[in-house]
Length: 150
Image (cartoon, rainbow, N blue to C red; front, side, top):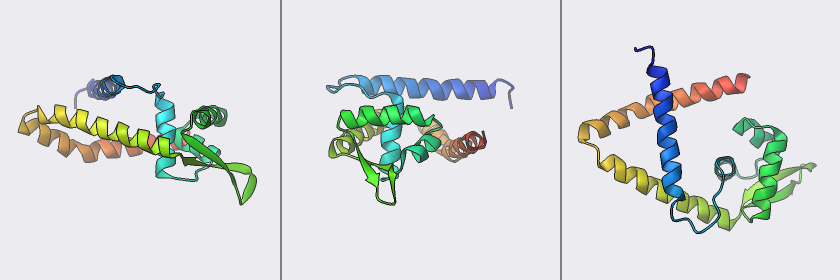
C-alpha cells in the first residue's frame, strides 16, 4: 500500500462530500441547514426520543453544542422537545412533519444526484465503487469506535 494512500482516501472522501453538499444547496428555497443540524435531525430520525446527552455522545459534540442546535431546530419548527416521563429533568427529541419532509427531500435529491453521476461511470468503475462499500463501512465503524474511546 502506498504511504500516501490514507491521505488520498481522506481527501477524496472529503471532496466528494463537499461537492455533494454544494450541489444539494443549489435551488433550495428554504434557509440552508448546517451540517451539524442535518446530522442531529438524521440521528433523531433513526432514534426517535433520543435525549440531548445521548445525542451529544453519538455525534461526538459537547452537550451545550447539541443544546444550542436543539434550540435552533425547535425554534425553526424541525424538532419537538418533550419532557421525558421517566426523568422530568431530561428531554426527548422528536422530528416534526416539516423535518421529516425536509429530510426525505434531501435524501431523495442526494440519491438522484449521486445516482446520475455514478451512472456516468463505466461498468468497471461502478463495480469497483460497489465492491469498496463494505470496506468503507468498516472504516467508518473503526473511526467511530476510536472516537468512542476518547
